[in-house]
Amino acid sequence: MTATATEQVRRLVERRAERAHASHHVLVVQCGDDEVVSVAGGTVRHGGPLMTVTTPFFVASIDKTLIATAVLQLVAEGRLQLATRLDEVVEPELWDGMHPLAAGGGGGITVHQLLAQSTGLPDPVTEAPRGERPWFASLAAGTDMAWTAADVAERLRRIRPHFAPRDPADPRAKVRYGDGNFLLLGAIVERVEAAPLAEVLATRVFAPAGMRHSWVDGGRPLDPATPEPAALSTRDGGELHLPMAMASFPAVYATAHDLIAFLRALGTGRLVPQPYLAVMLGSWRRFGLPRDRAALMEPGWPIEYGLGVMRYQLPRWMTPARAVPPMIGHTGSTGCWAFHVPGAGGGDLHLAGTVDVVGAGALPYRLAPRVVGALTARGS
Image (cartoon, rainbow, N blue to C red; front, top):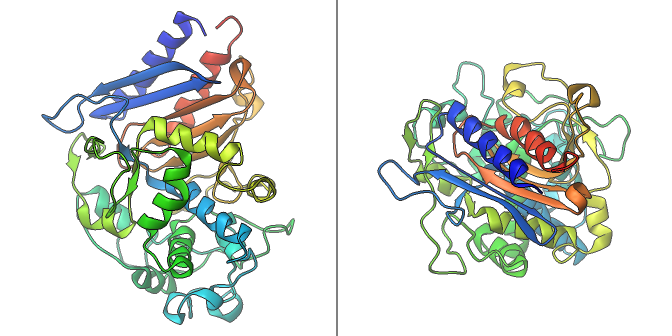
């Protein structure tokens, strides 16, 4: 990597953060064992300390890959099966009547379908019953709120599902992104482990991956000297404080280095045994083109989904200068990302970062390919 390429990446990140009206930004890129880019700018909060690459941030939907990792560990241990149904592990209030197009009114939805986003369930955060406001719109406007798994299930009962669930291995299976699938998986993990998700992820994911500066809301990081997390911003530059919502998700916080450590541990089979990792990464389904307003706010075409993980590659006609290799990982609605790019840059690239702006979920899909392209261009 040349100094010119790394400086180009710095400018890319700074420009994208400025357009998003972000109060801060961070990006870390590693190639093999070498750190080739380390960028941070702005302040942690208004009037607060400077943002650094060691500042933790809210990882938003990147937590789906963390939850999927815990689920597949339980499957590998024989404590769950991919074919396990909701009605076998959680109480009826979390599935009864939730999906009128599914077996048993929702009880027949399987762990596999939840992981693969092939349930057809609506998204309880970005979609709403007729005449009501989406939770996401309220949160983005600064209205804090709390909910339980039972509240999510009740909301899903009042929103029309998109399609009937199918086995993810079925060639006719559809996928549609939705937070409800993973809120239900979180409830399943808590029931099977008889412990809060904060404890489960700390034990099963953070500690073995060496993520010493990561935690779930309500828990604590392994390193007590970990700084306070960065604040979220609105798209007009305001600051958001949503303690009840963060406790309800529950929110995961991590540093960019910790997210890369997680991707490395996952990819080398240290977290999920290779046969199950192959399942996680072995059956990709592409999201369809958005056909409604909610779908415009969610990850969609040309992103493919495995089991709690994304694969993203722009079509060749959209990158005429050079082909950009596929990126595997996940993004979040606050403009955060964690990607592994196998075989790129003369080795493997790992990149993670954020702009911490609610509603900036599309930013990583514009920024990450340009970062990878700049660092893998001939002569870079």
